[in-house]
Image 1 (tube, rainbow, N blue to C red):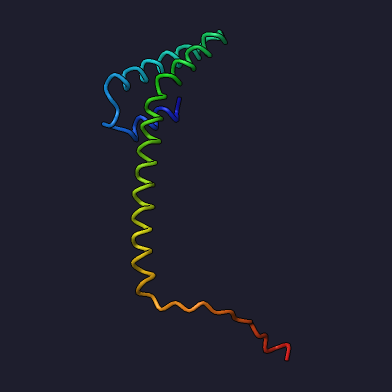
Image 2: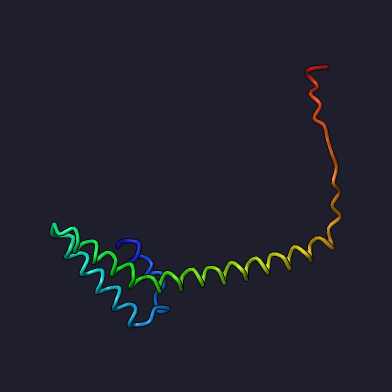
Length: 101
């Protein structure tokens, strides 16, 4: 429940009103159910919350994947530009310990 609430806050205006209402209702129902001892009811309310928040999670992952793809593309472009201008020398070296001589 806490993670779902936090995700809702992070998504902000990206959530549709219907999604937000469904998630809030499912959260409240689960909180009420947790006050009791009916295991089946708690499991049903947990599933309802999971189902209600599934679209939100899909949207978050899609946004993150899009952001990551754009960042990776930008990094590749920047890397291609830098390698053409750099005078990089690949060399091997050996450390010499003066105290062993």
